[in-house]
Image (cartoon, rainbow, N blue to C red; front, side, top):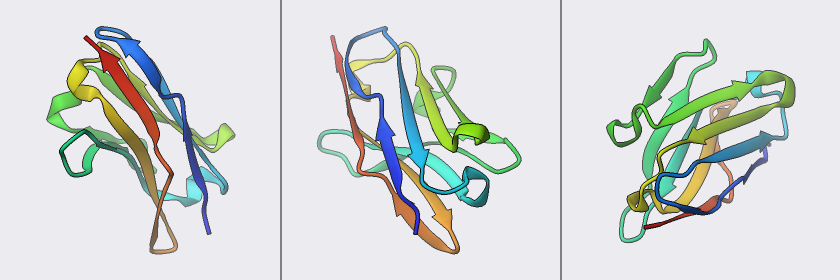
Length: 115
């Protein structure tokens, strides 16, 4: 079993920044396909960004050049640095990872961007 615990959400003005954290209960090196997802009001959960064990990253078009995903293996933590936030970024952000072929999700952290 793996526990993923997100933190770092909050209320920020448009144009501001937040850094989300996802702390894993196991060595992050053993967790595959780690990524961030979000659920914005009135929409289904959508993929935001992911990082593979080799360090390669991928981003949804709507966050390219604004968000940065990275892992700190020493802290067993996944991060999402979010810059130049927009009101449409408001939602609940979740991290996800796969361990021994099973998907695990965190409980989510709320991000609210005021215009």
